[in-house]
Length: 151
Image 1 (tube, rainbow, N blue to C red):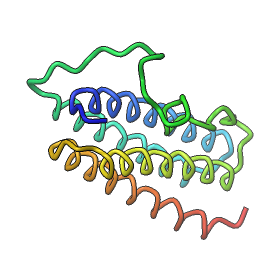
Image 2 (cartoon, one colour; image 1 turned 180 degrees about the horizontal axis):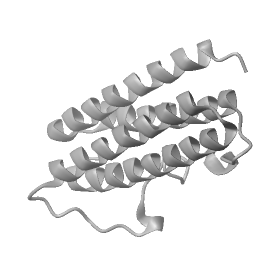
Image 3 (cartoon, rainbow, N blue to C red; image 1 turned 45 degrees about the vertical axis):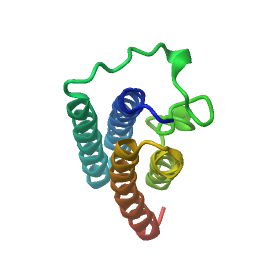
């Protein structure tokens, strides 16, 4: 990808979906009775909304292309942070929820990092690198929580 506007349109969609999925995980942990993990997922949804706002702000004066679902260029045909999320339900345990979130964050990181590594546009490389670094922080936090999770 070599078009900043198209990239930002993708980032907006990716972060919007990530926030929605984290809200689903927070609700599932509320049902599970795991308040601490529910709070964590609510915070992650907040971070995704901040990333969404950042992507929209970076669009600023630009006209981001309105993309239909079939026009998004996702690695596996599905937004990286939603792939594999069909398993979210109220009966999900903490380990399963963390593994699902970690998979999504790893996919999001790989998406941004791949664009940063392959684009010929210097501005886009900088933006994608920043987004990849933010996703890497989320991956690290989830890895740490998963290592501490006993069940």
